[in-house]
Image (cartoon, rainbow, N blue to C red; front, side, top):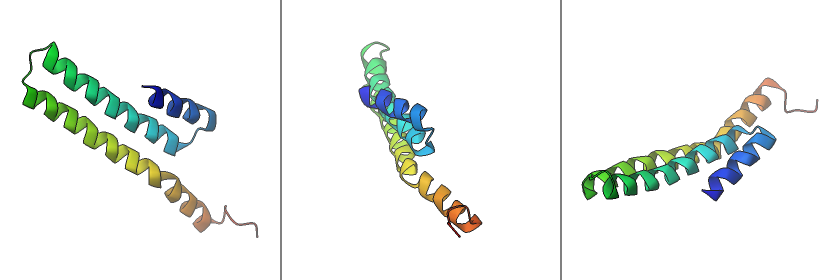
Length: 88
């Protein structure tokens, strides 16, 4: 998806762990939607099974996106604790 590409491009420019996690999370959401549809339409998998596959990818994708919100905060607090973030 376009959002996956844009967040991955931003990660490559900034090398931010949060943007990498965001790109992975959005990619998992996109992959789950595509995989669920393909499994049902072309592989003959039941609707319940394909929806379950999509739901798992969605849950993991949102978990990774939630992680992306906090990964830089943890890094910032580690720097502050070690004295790297202070101007003293």
